[in-house]
Amino acid sequence: MSDLSQIVKAYDVRGTVPDQWDERVAEALGAAFTQLLNASDEPGDAVVVGYDMRASSPGLAAAFAAGVRAEGRSVIEIGLASTDLLYFASGSLDLPGAMFTASHNPAQYNGIKMCRSGARPIGQDSGLGEIRERAQALLASGGSRPAGEPTQPAERRDLLPDYAAYLRKLVDLSGIRPLKVVVDAGNGMGGFTVPTVLGDAALAALPLEIVPLYFELDGTFPNHEANPLDPANLVDLQRAVVEHGAEIGLAFDGDADRCFVVDERGEPVSPSAITALVAARELAKHPGSTVIHGLITSSAVPEIIREHGGKPVVARVGHSFIKAEMARTNAVFGGEHSAHYYFRDFWFADTGMLAAMHTLAALGEQSLPLSVLASEYERYVASGEINSTVADQAAAVAEVRAAYPDAAVDEMDGLTLRFLDGAWFNLRASNTEPLLRLNVEAPTRERMVSLRDEVLGRVRR
Image 1 (cartoon, rainbow, N blue to C red):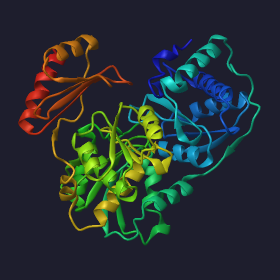
Image 2 (tube, rainbow, N blue to C red; image 1 turned 180 degrees about the vertical axis):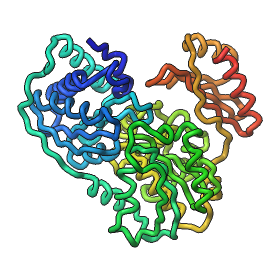
Image 3 (tube, one colour; image 1 turned 180 degrees about the horizontal axis):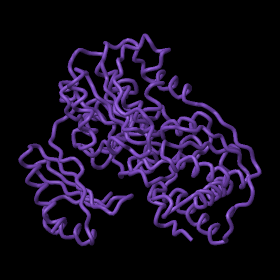
Image 4 (cartoon, rainbow, N blue to C red; image 1 turned 120 degrees about the vertical axis):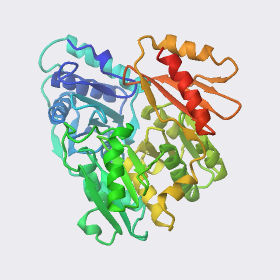
């Protein structure tokens, strides 16, 4: 019997197929998810199910749907989808949903991101732990169909055109200057959604020339991993932007809920700069609003939010934590260092596509190159996220903390130490992988490099 504690993480399900989980486990999780919904009087009588391009996704999604139907709810199957398309379906239909994807993880992985109606998040403390316990009990009872035979129908719907139309209403790109845009989909779901949202034939008047890279859906990721957070996976996009003389490059991760940006020189634009840029645009429309930023975003982000009349609020890393804080504060926007971007107009959910459209609009509404525009939002020097595999994570963190007794300490999410000169670093355990993650920022490159190397030396000793 599968030990579900190995695959049910802080805010989603994630593990290798078939050794850590398979269709039988997926069916039990579908039944357990529906039991939770029924016990909490979740509105509606259906669950929306979508999946990405991984070979195991259709079978896992079908098994999950069978578990849902056996517990008395019907299923709306939207088929191939990006994660933010699933959130659109959940929000616009006001139904709970489940997206089958392992995001940026390698091909042998798969997972589930579950939400309540209106795309409200489900995390470890908001139902995911109970789902794990219920599913574990169903599996322990034995049988190939732990919840019984499906009794409710399944309906197929294509919501991609509605999703595209909704995003285009939120950000109007029809009046911007002509832009050449290289898009690296990484053989992930961006190759499915970008043509409809930004390159549809019906949008001939849209002044965008899309140069596609790796739009073919392929869950084996033959060109590079669909994880733009790793600089190695941006190399092809950077080269193509320069070769094509493009104004901007966009890179999506496997399930296309994250978007990374490259300027006209082929240089990455930090997610913190994109967070600040989009925050300024949203605050111009909604003055005085709250904006959420992740703990690891640049210090420039709360500074710029305040300068534009907004109220910055910091939140823990992770989409379920950010979404909960967005809903609690009615924030207009939220951004993380990992390039997740959240919008009140999108049911407080994250959508890489909408962030990309805001960036295109900001670039196209004026004549400056993106490198100059982005420099307005980049005030400090950051290391980027550096991962270390450490046998005793707690001991390593304790040693690092003891080495800086005069620093200000914040333990909201891992260990954050701040120094009088404006430098800071965060060291935290990954919620999804056996790693310690380090992020360092400082006023100068010399200070950043020195602090980064000091901390890494202690972590990796």
